Length: 154
Image 1 (spheres, rainbow, N blue to C red):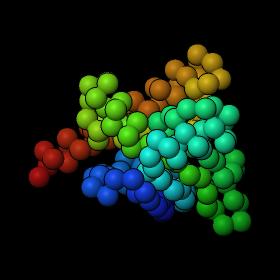
Image 2: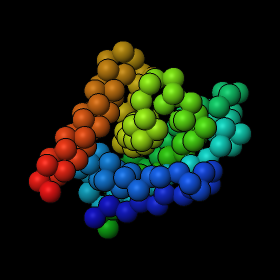
Image 3: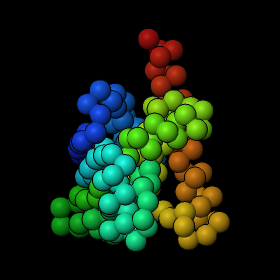
Image 4: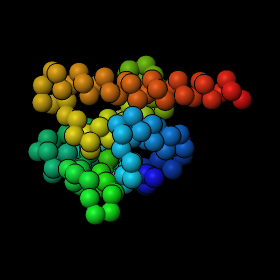
C-alpha cells in the first residue's frame, strides 16, 4: 500500500480530493508498491527560493521534485520516493495559458513530479523527454478512461 501526504501551504480552498487516485494510478502503471511521498503546495515566492537554492535558477517554476533515494529499501520493502513541490499560482496560470482546467494542470504537474522521483529526466535529451512526456500522457489518459468507465457503471 502506498502512503502520501498532501500539504497545502497556499490555497485552503483548492480542491485536490482527486489527487490520491491519480497518484495511485501513476504508481500502479510504473509498478511501484509500498511507496511513500509528500506533495506540498506553495506560492511562487517559496518556489523561487527553492529553485534558486537547489538548482541555481533565479526564477520560479511550476514543479520541483526532491528524491530521497534511488533504490528500494530491501529490508522493509518500502520506497521512500521524496517530496514534490507545486507552485499553485504557476499551476493556475499555466491552466489558463494552455486552455485546460486547473484539475488537469495540477494532475499533470503531480504526475510529472512522481516520474522525476522515479528517475525519469526530460532534461537529458530528446529521447528521454519524449519518453517522460509519453508516460505522463499515458497515466493521465488511463486515469480519465478509468473515471469514464466508473461513471458509466453507476
